[in-house]
Image (cartoon, rainbow, N blue to C red; front, side, top):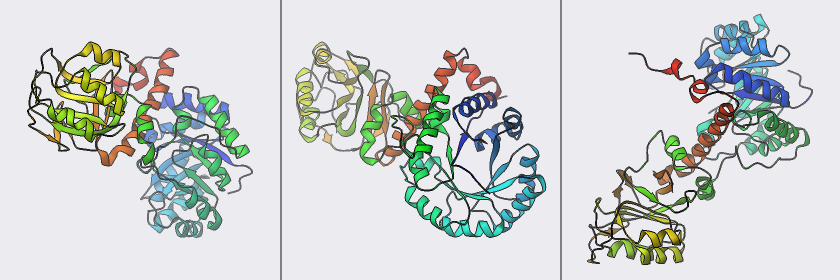
Length: 434
């Protein structure tokens, strides 16, 4: 395969074909060279997705991201007949599958890209793919790997230096990292979400095209992956609904209500857990001394109705720099706490308080709002409520939450242009029958 310039390929990972075609139109206007029918789109719409994309863009190369793993010739043939110029085959498949896919493509004028997703030795596989007749290899960092913050660029450089085939790269690229990919020698740069999740796709594509051509990163606050040390920063950009969506609708505390004067206040921090008896405010207050700046005190008081947190505790926590407090029980002095602006979430409000008897524990696993909370779990709270994120998944879920937010930004734009949520999501098609 001969390429005269670095190619920008837009990956259309939609489930709805009309949305994909509209996004592709805007991307091509912004400078996208190739158009990819993404795997989710093909699984949702079948090879009609390829047919319609080829009709819409007869002068653009159309890639069918089939991720073929078996019956190589047959699957490449049917994609080719639908209009695909290039078809992906997984590098993890058998040599015979790749060779058969190449032969199938030759009959109908399609070329084979070997996707190196999850291949342990990409360079060795690229050399073998060349021997088998493939046209290109793709270094692919999968979505699940991206959420853990995996960086492909060092591997990309080594692959480009040693591969006898042109190298494509895919996996969470944006207007900053696309320039790095081009600088590392990738000849095809595949961008999905940083284009298709943008409210203004044409402008987003132009910025990425500029970054590729100039090799100069174009700064962006969106469409990036956050590292382990950036978890708080990432969670502060999203809402508690975004987080529970990222957790597959899990993690939300029930019955725990925000006590916030400013509805735009967000609480993000790691949990310092407390188990206390109704009205016994000793351990919750002692936990302030145990907590550090940015922590969230989470109290399991069994849903009790006697106050065990108030103004003075809030001042103590505020001065120390805590991010907030969550109480499955009662709080009081709400007016003073609202004026202070300290983030408080509680099940009940009460005027009375109990006594500091000292029963309970600090730093143990508890249940708050129906959710298990362990020391160090991440707590995200805002005007919609509180969500618990398991500490071992915090980086992944922070990135997935941003992905949810970015998808919603595009849906919002489509609604503003005259669509509706039902039409954007094509709800009737996906309703369960029976």
